[in-house]
Image (cartoon, rainbow, N blue to C red; front, top):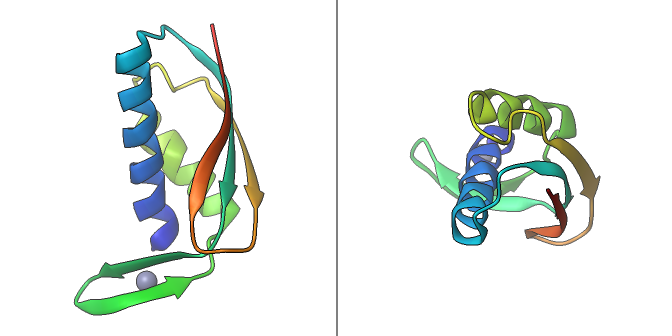
Length: 91
Ligand SMILES: [Zn+2]
């Protein structure tokens, strides 16, 4: 569940960057993902292990039809309770 919620957050963030930097294409994005605490479906905030496969699948689905459609996502799991973009290669 968190993987799909996180996928939406990542794509939203990237689209903001695309707009503000006026990018026309992003070749690849490097991301670091920790354990993300979220509240959803009536549950209090809790952490869940993120599945990289689900996360990539979610990103692919949400990015369909956008300029992120062909972007390659390199996702690395890290310790901690946050995620961040480590690199964006735009053209
Ligand atoms: Zn959850």
